[in-house]
Image 1 (cartoon, rainbow, N blue to C red):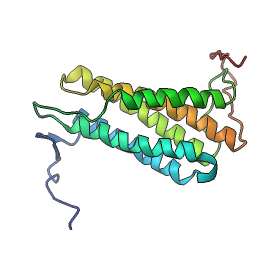
Image 2 (image 1 turned 180 degrees about the vertical axis):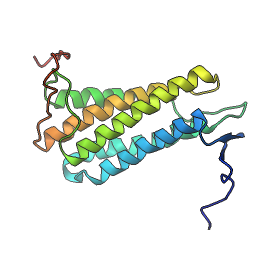
Image 3 (image 1 turned 180 degrees about the horizontal axis):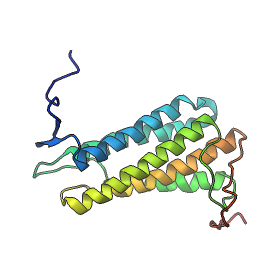
Amino acid sequence: MKIYTKTGDKGQTSLIGARADKDDLRIETYGTIDEANSFIGKAVTELDAATFADILDDLEAIQHELFDCGGDLAVVTKTRHYKMTDEPIAVLEKRIDELMEEGPALERFILPGGTPAAATLHIARTVARRAERQMVSLMKEQEDVPVIVQKYLNRLSDYLFAAARVVNARAGVRDVEYIRGAKVFHTDKE
């Protein structure tokens, strides 16, 4: 089987129902979602299954959901059936709450880093945020986009932040606070 088709050699690619320039905002957005997914895959390779089984389970589900997000963005036919629903968002919210409860109290902004896996999750978080910004621009430009994807990306970046902090905490690595920042977060742990 040949992986190359040569159909994109003139700077266009296929959507479901049309062709578009490879630099089209829709293509750029789902390409950025794919980039976030790849960094999540890298983080998976950096996590020990014995210590991080719950987070690994989360990340595998998220990788599938990101494929769903990209697929939903690729649909431009008049009749659309999107895969993304509110259910994965509710799951992310539950897990964010659990992880934030497990992690150390948060008062200030933290510097992205710590363990290799936490640093990779922070990269995935920033890429997810970029995808969300692109999604907002796409929603302003085109009406036929699944708004649920933007909501999912917003929650995903919060999840990745919480997961990165827990990865560091379980590994015994302290988050480094941004030293010139004021206390901006107030938690129930105070």
